[in-house]
Image (cartoon, rainbow, N blue to C red; front, top):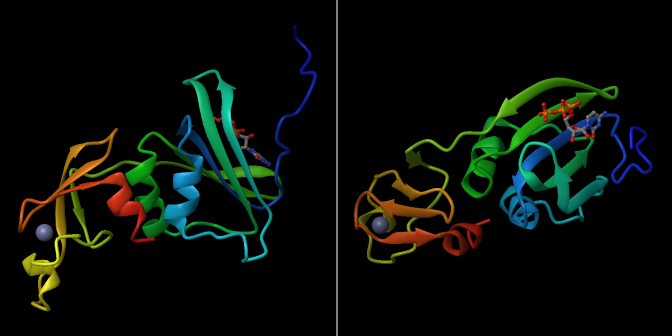
Amino acid sequence: MSVEREVRVSKIRDGTVIDHISAGYALDVVKILGVTGHEGQVMTIAVNVPSKRIKVKDIVKIEGRALNRQEVNRIALVAPRATINIVRDFVVVEKLEVKLPSLIEDIVKCVNPTCISNSGEPVTAKFYVETEEPLLLKCHYCGYVLEKADVLGQF
Ligand code: CTP
Ligand code: ZN
């Protein structure tokens, strides 16, 4: 059928569309951004929708808000294949592919209480990405391996 019979989620005027999130991960994206819903912006979350590129995907649309670089980097932790679209006056003015670097610095803390990075010493938390999906991050200092739940618990 050539005519779209329904629009599942409306287009937005201004804001950010996080597209191509792996199916089922939209709520993790919202959590890692620290968005609670009490900020007052309109937010639409679509889970398990059909997609040309990846069969099924999730989408998060946050109106009236652009994301900064740190927020984009955080999204890569839970949705390494996501596309960030900045929309102004209904037009996509910027498209960023998120990318998870092999070394994660600053964003996440080690959950091992005896790790030197938690001892008050002036060392920056540092992790190596062991696997992206499922997310496994290995601490540079103590070797502790963080899972996605350990990461999400920090936001
Ligand atoms: N979008 C939106 N509101 C707009 C413009 C775009 O919600 N005013 C959404 C679209 O629904 C889509 C995403 O932003 O989910 C990217 O839009 P666009 O670049 O137009 O779509 P595609 O070309 O399909 O993107 P891609 O090539 O990244 O798959
Ligand atoms: Zn550690």
